[in-house]
Image (cartoon, rainbow, N blue to C red; front, side, top):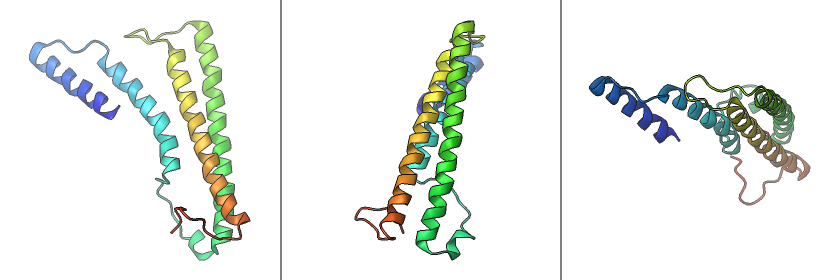
Length: 151
């Protein structure tokens, strides 16, 4: 997806400069590809623990308590993600019923909204998985399972 966005942008600049004829709707396409990429990158980031976090406070507590705090925060984040997904689903219905389209390429807005909703649902599921790992650690009395990704 990133390559497609980059290629489209580069080709658009070249055709604009060389032929004074940009690719019709290129900016709109790159924008919506970026939204799609962003929506699904959130879930991937959660699955791979790609967040940068400040651990000043949690580093001084025991691993079991740290995992408990992590599980609580992760569940709160999952609730936030599912609320966002719900709002995008509602917006999907609204834009579908109104029949609104983008200005350049006439892409139905509901398509964009449903992609964002699905991306946030994936983020929600990724956070639930992350919380389940933390809860499993706490319930197992802080013992690591083989194949765990704890340090």
